[in-house]
Image (cartoon, rainbow, N blue to C red):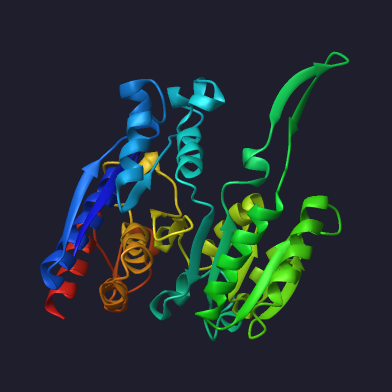
Amino acid sequence: MKKNIAIIKGDGIGPEIIDETIKILNIICKKYNHEFNYEEILMGGASIDKYGAPLTDETIAIAKKSDAVLLGAIGGNPDTSPWYQLEPHLRPEAGLLKLRKELNLYANLRPAFLYEALKKACPLKEELIENGFDIIVVRELTGGIYFGERETKKINNQLVATDKLTYSQEEIERITIRAYETAMKRSKKLTSVDKANVLDSSRLWRSIVNQISKDYPEVITEHMLVDNCAMQLIKDPGQFDVILTENMFGDILSDEASMLTGSIGMLPSASLSGNSFGMYEPSHGSAPDIAGKNIANPIATILSAAMMLRYSFDMTEEANDIENSIDNIISSGYRTEDIASENTKIISTSEIGNLIAENILNK
């Protein structure tokens, strides 16, 4: 099968982790007789340096004509990088938000699961994770406060900042349907997270979820306030399967869930449109402090590529092959620095990529 993949290496550790991921994808091509064509495009800080803008029309056009987009990481240190001296709409993250909008990537899927071999890296007490956990956060990605009207102005000689949170019925309906379809393929349990005791947008959200839930009678549906959900993730993460929520709540909760796994460097994500198209990226940032040192963990990006194979290319066997190989390498005691523990062998970014590739090819 032939597929065209737009590659955004990005900033910081982005190029390193993408290089290892392409290494794995090339092994998949060799083993399963596929052909992946890669076209590298710029976004974020790298785009600012070359074009003076975090996202260009050319990048958008190339991304739109591809079968999927694979992204490393963007951004830098806000305290030291000159990118953050620019106006907000010219900073690296503005390019990412705009690209999500342009590609209509309204559904963000972020899995958080605990490898048996990494239980010691989990910050929770052992009795709380005895049976592990396997959560997927389904986050609405193109609406809410991140895309609402915003302004900062002087009122009565004081600066006042305003960010507007808006959701339409259509936006809530489509992400809710996506979450229920996801739940149907898993354990048939969905937790919708909102702040309906305070916010009108959350009351509309809860009403629409209740309506759509009638079309999925097999799925157990529960509602939970966002502050309670944040506590329950720490108290008993195993109670969750699919968590459905809006943009800002999802941003916060998915990062919290990721740290339960021991390292955000282990967690992939998929941002999907209404069809098979998607953009795939790790949940972590660009980690500029370790860029170029060959110590970054590429596993989240490699797992993101596995999600790309599964969700955009319908290559389930190939995706399973990558995921199982990663499990094999971790279970054999190999680690990057961020997930190292006693009696494990610390290896570099490129070395762990090589081991995963060899495991795939030799199985």
